[in-house]
Image (cartoon, rainbow, N blue to C red; front, side, top):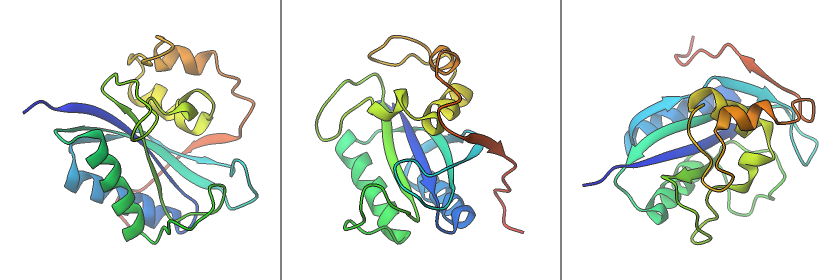
Length: 166
C-alpha cells in the first residue's frame, strides 16, 4: 500500500502546552513517521486573543485526503473544539492539512492550503521541518519562500517546548 506524505499545521491558544502534546500523541496514533517542527509562539491573527503555540507536523499515511481530514476534525473535537466555533476565535486545537503529496485540489479541502503563503506561523515551521520540499503551485522550496516572506508582518518566535510534562 502506497504511503502519502502529509504536512499538518497545529495551533492552540487555550491550555496550549496540554493541547499541543495531546495533538502529537493523537497524530502518532493515526499516522506513521511523525516528525514535528519546533514550537513557535505567535500573536493571534485575525482577532484579539491569547498568543498561540504553532508547529507543523510531517507524517506518512495510506489514508485518503477525506479520511485524513476526518481524523483531524475528530482529534480537534476530542480536545474540546466545537464546530460552532467562529473561524477567528480562541481554540483548544486547530489541525489543518497543509499538503498531501503534491496534490493540487479544491475538494474535499483546498490543497495546498492557501495560508502556507500568507501566515508566518505556518511558513516558518515548514521552512524548518521540510526546507527543500517544493510548494506544489509556486514551485519554490519552503526555505526560499520563508526567506522572501515579509518576516516583520507577524510577531512569531520559536520557544523551548517540553514534550514531556513536568
